Image (cartoon, rainbow, N blue to C red; front, side, top):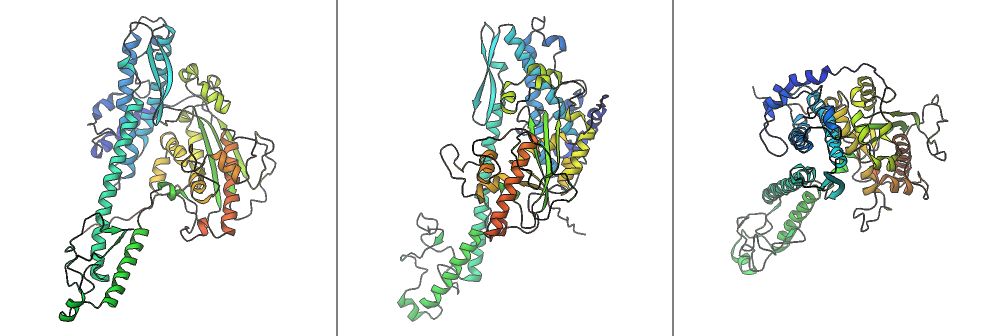
Length: 527
């Protein structure tokens, strides 16, 4: 991976040339607010979008730290609401009005530096005795909370990330419920249509009564165990006297057969309904073989705020023999790790901005052992400023399926950090396999408990159950080591599943490599 001493940032300004493409189809941000694209055009992405100068970040500066922090937070909230919407818009742009994903990457680049500036402005307030800062969990996210230590208002400079993220999550939940309700209505319409072919469950195959004439339709007892029932009070059901005088009525044995057929068809359609667990699309298939495992370590969880600081990846064949000429003596951080069938191992370290290094991150030191305060200088290039590193990684990501544990994390960072990745993904050139749903759905050892209602599906727990990590050890939280135990666990697991005709070899398994990828559909136009 590259190390460029001269950084070319002109692409940040050039990315704004695609604003006209985005503004054509993206009118609202993630919070349903109108987007002022002229405001976006005026942002100086190359030199910084915050209002503070380097001197303003020093304790004792003459500027008003409260006002600077307030202005920066407003810019960040406004910008991130736009970034949060761009992935969905780009992927759903089937007519390809938007040619590249350069603009979201450029906005995320600027937002990272703005976030660093915000952190140092908070630090300045602490140093000046204006407030204290403590991290607090707020539902889905952890945010820094300011507590005033002097006669200084802090309500208008609190971090609104939790409020924003949680409100969006609730809106997504409401939208899902509306879609599910609409899907249910469509399904019931199809079931009613099926009655024409398979026989009405009330009136029989000769349709002697309309399908909607049931007196108990819509009542609480209309469905029992998802199957319509016959109510004795339903006038549409023929009784013995009616059969005697009405030759069009259906004889009871024949009626029962048709009713059973309709019930079976109902059950089949219900079984074919979309599954609730959305990660199933990332499961591997029966034909999976060569894969590249990858794991990222970052100094935060949001790809538009955090930097990639450690990348580890290696290859492993799940079915065919490993290459004969591949070295087999690689030394991992944990010396007891078995090499297994892994080959072509790589570990790369990247840096953070000087501002991020100055702020530091004690949690990352504790988790990974990486001290980002030392990750500055030519030895540690910034990944989002290293086009050679990005190009090398993109080539690898598109050459075979890549595997990650909770792969949506890596995917989100690739989208906003790797030039060309979003375009390649949209064009169907990227296939993603996730070992998290493998653990949740195919590993019986993943027993639900109070702390893990879906079972313990962390990489640490999964690797231990699959014999890739010692019971008395823990995952290393370094890219290459975590990649290795993940691939070992995956191969052990697949070998067991194949022997037992389960997982990919079970009734719901996939052919081919499986995994998540974009399927290209041809658009048909009327002439």
